[in-house]
Image (cartoon, rainbow, N blue to C red; front, side, top):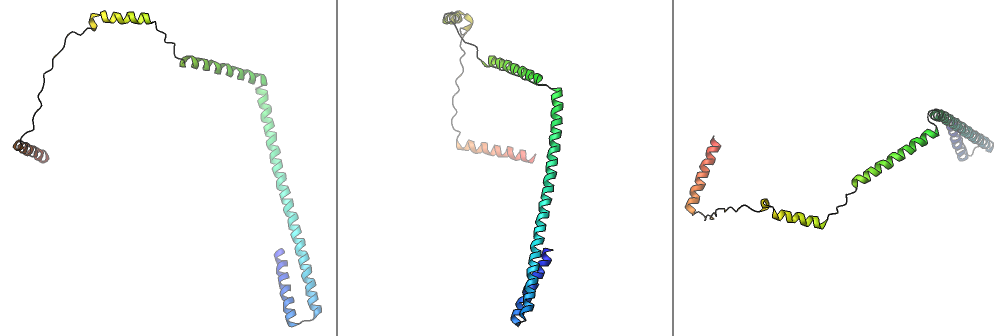
Length: 178
């Protein structure tokens, strides 16, 4: 609707400008100016109505959101009532204290397992045990074994290396053929 009024306003503006160029009668131009003002007035009224309608639409949406929130609160309250019927505060506190006691017990056990035992040795006992090892005939060596000494080989002369490399190439070619 606003677009229709806007088109009429533009048409009237063009007619007024054209009339001024043609030097039309002032009464006709005044009449068109009044029409233009009426159109502008109705455009403003139309925009106001559109704004009121939008505000009402937003209010309805807000009421719907409020209704949804109320429904959510009602369902939450019923869940809390059911929970309180099944579990009273005394049971919850008792369960919590039991959990604390069990946690403390587990921590004590863990602490006992992780602590290293005290390693306290008597020096006199250790010396006596050490002396017992030196008197033991089993710990004495029985004898020694002599290992033969192997002489290091010298570098082969050149002709022997050529023979060895030719023998190796024959073996390689035999391997490749077979």
